[in-house]
Image (cartoon, rainbow, N blue to C red; front, side, top):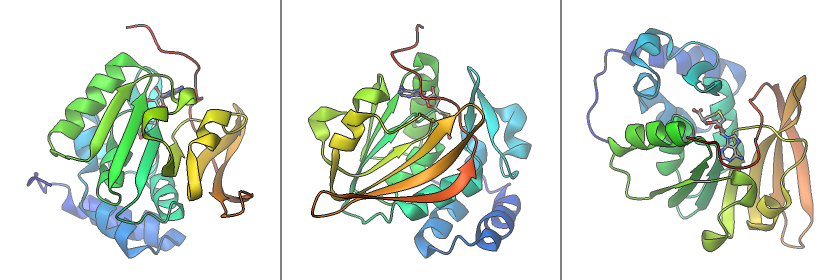
Length: 218
Ligand code: SAH
C-alpha cells in the first residue's frame, strides 16, 4: 500500500479495539489489515471524521459503506488463504475490496451502479492493487469466466443466495451473504464441502441494502 495520511491512526486503533476485538473478532490477519486500511479514504471528505464510527455511512445513491464490525466478521468467516480467488458482489466505495485484495490472491468485484463503480474504482486505483478486477454488472450473474471462486461475498441482501453464485463456489469454498428481507437479515456463512453438501451457519443479525436485479441507468 502507498503511504497515506495517518491523521486517523488513533480513531482507527480505537475502532479495532472497541468495535472488533471487544466483540470477539480475533483473526490476527483481519485485525492487522483493518488496523492499517485508511477507511476515511473511502468516504466523502465531509464524512471523514465519522469514518471510524461504529456504524454504516452513506456513500451516495442510497447505498452505504458497511459497519466496520460487519466487514470484520465477514472477512474472518471467509477464512481466506493467500492463494484464494474471491468474488465480491456490490463493491460500492471499495473498502471491503481493498481488505480482500490484501488477504487473497485475486479479487473479482462487481457493482451495478455506474457512478459507484467509478467511485470505487477511483478509490482503489490509489492503492495500485495488481490483483483486483472490477466489473460493472449485475452480481446475480456472478462472473462465470473466472469461476469457480474459493470465496464469495455479498454486500447486499437477498431472500436467498442466487443460484448462479452458489454454482460458482468451488468445492471447499465459503460464501457469506446477508439473507432476509427489508425488516431484517441474518449474515450467513455457507461452506461447500467436498461431498457437495452445503453447511449453513448464521453469524449475526444485520441490516444491509437490497441486492437489486439488473444494471442501474447512468
Ligand atoms: N461493500 C460496499 C457497498 C455496500 S452497499 C461498501 O462497503 O461500500 C451494497 C452495494 O451493492 C451497493 O453499492 C449497491 O449498488 C450494490 N449492489 C446492489 N445490487 C447489486 C447487484 N445486483 N450487483 C452488483 N452490485 C449490487
